[in-house]
Length: 487
Image 1 (cartoon, rainbow, N blue to C red):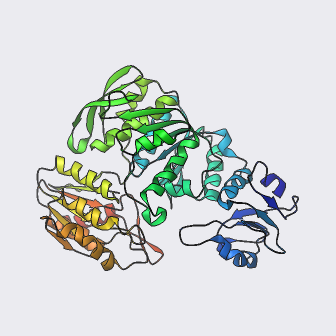
Image 2: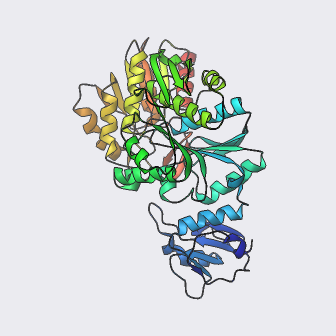
Image 3: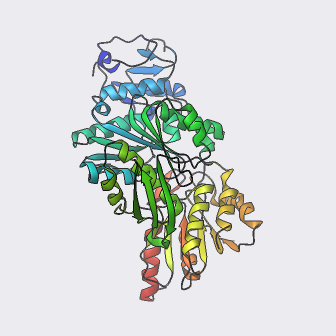
């Protein structure tokens, strides 16, 4: 594509490059740069692309997108290379975002479940073909576009995905919009018909530094949306309402004045939760098939978004009772035993507290929790996660999650203060496979084994390599071996 076309409508300061030069592709990783490509100097968590200009040029970069001109090299000078790249990526892929309706979901917890529920509601009530972008996988309607590596893809991956979705006939796209994506400008240039705020609690401080920075990143979504849908039960909602540059619709389990409100909530154990919903001057009873009080908020968020997009109240409420299970979210593993096994993605103090509380609420016996913390992530949440698990569990096994470039024993050592001061008995089993097996060995009739941290993930990341590892597979294979008498 000619540079002139790539720069159409793109924010930048100046360029030293001829506008008729041909650009073959865009990148921000010097290692994948090839002849004819434009290299953007994006600043990430650990590296600044400006430090890799030389490497990009050695690999054949034809154009540099940077904060300063590079002597003797065609350069697009811009104050914000990340945002410039986002707009250029839109142009490169034919701006598919302009042809679809976008729903963005942000928040610490509940993004994945809420996007799945919105997708299903829109498909079943509007007959829409809906693209999904998120933590578990990317989809164009019923076409699986592959597993995700980030909640929100990198900017070039995002627009390539959007092109695939539009070519597959998608009319709507619902996506998780992470704080990283908002802070790094990955979704700049996309207008969201609806932006959803689920909640805010401690996470990702390794990237943002402070909770204020974390919140400010999320607030950006509500300056890019036509309407916001906000959980006013969350303390941070007041800041969202204050900062939003769009009309706001609210949902709540506590405030009758909310636009969508759930009342008379009754939990049905692992089978789900019942409640009465009030919205658009109407009311109905919902038998929601996902357990936990937190699931009511996710259901209200999805319902509110669907109503904003034209779904009828009666149809939307009926479909809420039929939503499919979201992989790795309070997922019951079919072990055919006298105890229950649940796998959940909980990996923040608040999410651990909520899933443990939910499981304890429907467990007649003991809650045996298996918990690890990821390496190279916010270290301050490690004892808090252990503490949250201890407050609702009857026994805890501390183990490895994705250690990445840290030593598993060092991570667990930082978790120990959170559980050591409680009365909850615990032990350390560093190997995650052995930890899961030990928990299953301990389980008695009416107990629940709760395995937290990885949820849907089919891998364990160690020293930059992802090795196949699926908590659910580990449970099923060990239980099969027990039943066969081979262990």
